[in-house]
Image (cartoon, rainbow, N blue to C red; front, side, top):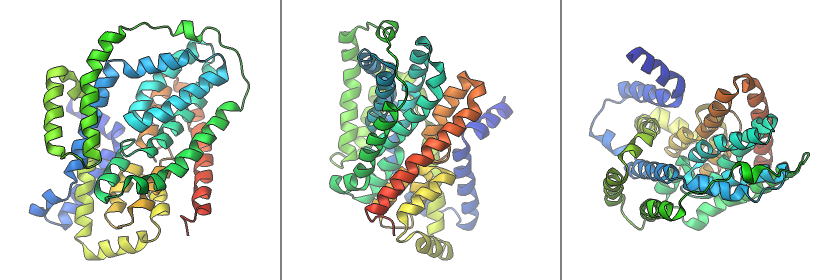
Amino acid sequence: MAKTILKNILKNETVFCAALLLAILSAFLVRPDEAYFTYPDWRTIALLFCLMILVAGLRSKGLFTLLGHALLKRADSLRALSAIMVLLCFFSSMIITNDVTLLTFIPFTMLVFRMTGHEDRIVKLAVLETIGANLGSMATPIGNPQNLYLYSISGLTISQFAAAVLPYAGLSLALLLAVCIIGRDEPLMEVAAGTDWHPDKRRMAMEVLPFLVLLLLCLLVVFHILPYLPVLICVAAAVALLDRRLYLEVDYFLLFTFLFFFIFVGNMKRIPLVSDALVQAVTSQELLAGILVSQIISNVPAAILLSGFTGQIQPLLTGVNLGGLGTLIASLASLISYKIVTKKYPGSKRRFLKVFTAWNLLFLTILVLEAILLGKVS
């Protein structure tokens, strides 16, 4: 039993395992002491926990599915349906994070396209939805874990944050719309009827309201209006009363991945030779470093690692968000789409990787060229 669990963790939580290994190895170089407790950014970890459990609550009440059904009723063609699903992922990810967006809407997309007889389009659309979720999530401080962390530690103003990400989010939206418009179109008369759903909206509103209020409190913490500890206690107590099962929906591996990377980075900063070398390597190249390192260890660990060796958070913020494009592991959210689609269609693994890589490299190239034109890359 234990061997099976360990095997599954090694297979499905590779980044977590890498973070744990790095933390352990670094502990041999810097003996554990009281300073270890100062390494983690506890505010970020607390906010991540709160946001994950509250979004899980909203999802469990069917709020996002209701939104999807409402939008689908407006689709009258294959092109419109594709655009709605991609845009739904793009904009939803700004609030409910990119990974939750994909967990919610990729299965929904597969269901709808099977019903309309267009399963052949699922792989490409899932890839575009993944790109949409990764790029849409960059637009807000709570859209993805790296944004939440960097915004929390940096002291950036909203205008500074917006300047780092919105030019790229805007171009990304235009590119996604262009891709959705290109291609053959067909009428879809059966979509609305095939996805018809009539929930008790009054009851849903009453169930959703407490989670929305708690989410508002979390946003006030994000913007440094409220302290995090009272809100953490409030959220934990409220969820215990509302639905204890939501505690099982939290991605604890992600939380511990943050914790172990904090330990590793903290220890590296205490080794002068290593710290000086990393500072020299990152300084003035934060944007490119964020993109390149993300391709190897994904953008969340890249943000934690590189932020420990530079004070220029704004270009780093841009870099790790653009760095979510590229390889399959550049963004952990991308792995979610891959697992969902290939589990249902095992024979699509090679095609998914081929389509994913082609579209990601295209988007990444265009956005890097935009950064160069804006003078953000020297």
